[in-house]
Image (spheres, rainbow, N blue to C red):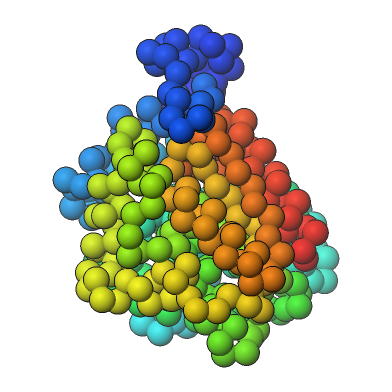
Length: 336
């Protein structure tokens, strides 16, 4: 499958789009050919989330994420660290220059709507970030819903952040140069941890890397209607995720669940916010970046209007995905 996808991605873009029945154009945006191919493939190979059990959805997501082999890094170490609900599995990715005394670090939370996602499924993007940012990336296997509902994932995220910083020497990381990040639900967790540690007085990340983050569980922005179906992440899918993660609607407005609704964002770390054009989460990601700016936080908003939710992990076949990872790695290098 990977070889077929790579071969198709090398075809002229006009031919790619023609093979799929024509271009996708919504809200003044046109999806690029490689994104259109991979989005179509992902939809065909995954279960309809809204009609699936968590177990069925997890099986489908795992199959999609394993399409591409990860790039080589210096070494990869699997560890277990203390967590509020028991030991947490983490995976540390070391760049080739890992022999240096202490490297910058990035604590990473994978996406998957708080219900899906594994360490294996994010090998590709974590390896890319480690190699290109010359940093140790520590990926966290936090507890998933519905077995462990909100705020279990946030609790695990905060605990793992604090453990990595407090035991930075064990990871070969400089504790003064650590960033935090994640994609989708993982971006939500990274933003929530930044809010929590700000309230507690630290230790603060040097940068928050928020890749198409979920920031508001209480309402649907206009992009939910624009991209309600036909893409890897759908409107119905987001409802399914939220219902499993925070079944009590009264708790969805809490800042740890919906960072966009926090009263005060002043003093938070600088942010690099990645936005996909064809994404139900597009508008709330932009809104969070704007609120951070209004609060005096330095924000780099990296918008990619030609691709879909999930593209950040697709640089093996989608050029804009590779561009987004490169730009994020540059932001990490500059901050760390």
